[in-house]
View 1 (spheres, rainbow, N blue to C red):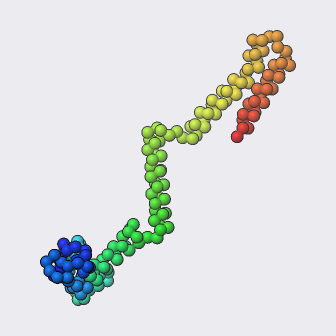
View 2: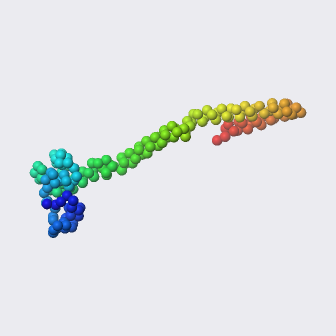
View 3: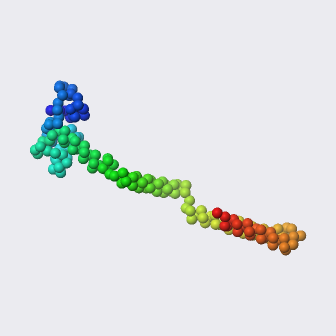
Length: 174
């Protein structure tokens, strides 16, 4: 009988067991208990997998060790999420979804720490600042006229026109 703590090389028949000559395990038959020790699962799990046809049996409760281990490994490889059973496209889609969820959570955390400001709040604040700047610039000609009484009405209108042109150009700049 092969011991459950034997090396993989011994299991596959590539090296002699520590206590004797090489053993061919391709026809080695084990019980449910022995197979459960080899695979590290319960006896009940072995029986369930045998009933489902996932592990080949010789008779109820008896298994060819090599065939059972290979069937178990194949099942592990193809049925476990993230273990090669999914297409690359599905894996990539799940990765993108996980990254999007992480980004969303990070934005939520930044907002909670008040590191982010809503775009509508920024827009509202800038609109107020720009309204104040516009009003201040449009009041320049009348303030200049009060300080510099020697300027003609034509001079004041020219200053007003230049300020309005500058504001109009700034409003339409990209």
